[in-house]
Structure formats: C-alpha cells, structure tokens
Image (tube, rainbow, N blue to C red):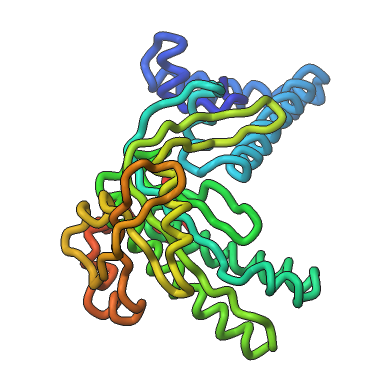
Length: 300
C-alpha cells in the first residue's frame, strides 16, 4: 500500500485501524527495512529495492498520464487507481476553438524547422492562457487549439472563464507575434470561437493510448464559429453570450446557417481586444478568482 502511494488515511481504512496506528505501522515498516539493510541482510535490501522500484514506476506512470490527459483527469485516475474507457458522462461546458488564419500560406513559405519552433512557442502561449483561466487543453491539431471549461472538473462560471481565456490567448499571441516580427518570422493571427452547452465526455482508447474526448453539437459549433472570426476576433455562441454578466463590448452578427444545423445561428463578435480589455477587465469577467489558477499550477 505504501508503494501504491496510498495516504495514511486510506491505509488505515483498508486495515480497519485508526490513522495513528497506521502511521506507526508505516514508520515501523521503514525502520525494520532500514535495520535489515543496515545489517547487510539480503532480504531487507531486496524489499527496499522492490519498494523503490514500485514508487518510481508509479511516479513515471503519473507523469505519463499527466502528459497524455488533462491534468484534472490524470489526478483523478491516479487517485482511483483505474481507468474506465468507453463510458461517457454528460457535462455542461464551454468550448474554445482557435485557429491560425492563413496558416497554409505560412507553412508554404516558412522552413519546416522554423515552423516547428513557432508552433511550439504558439502552443506554449495558448496553454498558459487557458490554464490561467481554469481551462483544460483538449487537443493541439496542427495550428488549431481546442480547450474546454467545466470538464473534467466542474466550473460554475465556465462561460466567463472561457471568454477570459480567449482574450488572454489573443493578448499572448500578440506578444509572441511581436517577438517573431523582430526576427523576421511571420505572425500567427488568431480567430477564436466559443460555444456553451451540453456535451458527452469520455475516456477513449486502450492501455497504450488514451484520449479524453468531448463530443456533441457544442463542440461542433465552436469550430463553426471560429471560422466566422477574422484575425484577432472572437465569436461567441448565443448561450455563451447570454451567460455573461456583465457583458463585454460586442456586435451581434446576422443570423446564418452553419453546416449540420437546421436553424440559423445567432452569434456575437467581441469588439477589438484593447477595447474589450479596457471596459471588461479580467477581474470583472465573472470568472471567480477562486476558480482561476496560475499557468504553473494546473487545476486539479
């Protein structure tokens, strides 16, 4: 149980003894192993090596999960000690989808090694902006970024946090673009779509490869809305817009049909970034400070 990383309370519960007694047993275990190893007994050394290897394996598994899966989900799976694939749950979320405008032309005219470095820096900036607003990065696909707010960890004010993240993503990319311009590299102008609604969340894959996935109309709509966004713009779905209080400076777009929808879609385009930030600052967005985390501390 120690090698599995179980806390004292869990060990006490499994052994049906008080926590204080479990703590004493753990101390006695380490003392016993240390005494055996100190005396040069092969059995004591063997058990210490086994314990050490089990802890190393657990840490490596945890690091792999953290790289493969959203941080909140990775922590949940490590705590539960098992994975359940193929089982979905309904969640209420806000999805953010960003895309680099003119990326095909940029890729055509930029050496692949420099383009790879740009993509890496772009993704790092987007990741920091999303985590800073309590979001979860779902996917990096080429120049596109998909993030979710409200899963795998519930978030009461996920629409506001998502809009905060969209503003932060534009601001972060503007800084990156300025540095690139000084080095003679092409900028990555962003278009962002934001959609709020129900989705099905599921852990899909196998023991070798796991993927935390969201499916549903909410995800599809965020993709369609980002296509409506010109460089530097963010387009919000009607449910996202109606959930915001206060509301940022925005313009309602003419209702239009999107692929896969029978009825026209209403959407709002945020005004220029500097105006939105000036009159709708991050602390006024409604994304509570309690739910926000710094980029160095992903939500758990």
